[in-house]
Length: 312
Ligand SMILES: Cc1cc2nc3c(=O)[nH]c(=O)nc-3n(C[C@H](O)[C@H](O)[C@H](O)COP(=O)(O)OP(=O)(O)OC[C@H]3O[C@@H](n4cnc5c(N)ncnc54)[C@H](O)[C@@H]3O)c2cc1C
Image 1 (cartoon, rainbow, N blue to C red):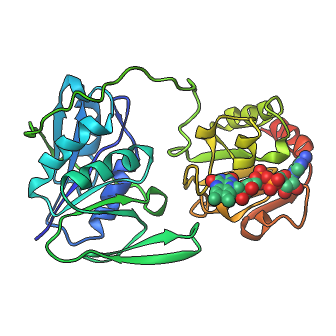
Image 2: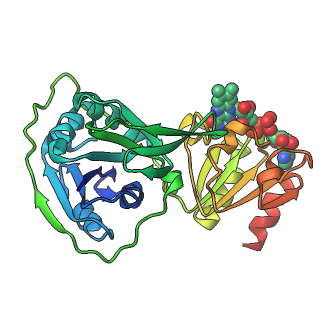
């Protein structure tokens, strides 16, 4: 008899697919009820999308001006209040979830279970450690609420077709005034979000410069892919660090991942190991990335990319 509350992640006012993946993880538990909580200044679009996710019992909305931006300090007290009757509170292990969920856990007086990749029992979960080289089983003692982040790369989106009820709620929480939204500086981009993209093309140190990265961007735009990078490419200043894929960057699971001029260091591979098909292009036949690639091409990326583009 357990109830699970899934905290929705929004992109603006749209539902991020990470929410559906959290629901899939929730369905791996024997829950009596899985509800989704949406906090926004305009919940309508996201609530309608969440109501369609298979397995969702109810969509709860907290529509308020102070929820216009996903500020962890503002959302966490509302999540903690809304979670009072729940046994589990799940959020995605994305930048959003990593920001807000530990605060919610602290307010609820529990530690957080991080990065659930598999459910082994009602209070037992698996998570990767050491850049995915070891799997840890985490057991939560009885009698404690379980607040957890879900490793979105490990779970598929749930099916659609549901029509769950949508209910507005008003959690009794004090909204802090010590943290306010001032502004957002982001790289406006038409490209798909790296963590949600079905196709991702990444460049590494082998790309050689910020100017050369335009080649990667052009190819990505041609096939509607998101663009990522290795840490070496980020550290060299070719691209901004929000594009970094890997242990200290983004963990992604696209259907297709293409790596150009990336050697395949373990810290990079940990970010892509759940990708559907991995294609590696590297001029060094001994590059470790070929060990995990489904398709490997030994070649110079400056020749391969224009050839590929010409064929598309
Ligand atoms: C704690 C820690 C965390 C880290 N986190 C991350 C992380 O999150 N993400 C990450 O990526 N790394 C991370 N790293 C760094 C990681 O160890 C590697 O240094 C990094 O991934 C290397 O990037 P790279 O493959 O682009 O560069 P390199 O290892 O230098 O490889 C460049 C590759 O490009 C190939 N190449 C060169 N020219 C061409 C060409 N013209 N055509 C085709 N191929 C070419 C070369 O053969 C080579 O294989 C981390 C390291 C540490 C210690």
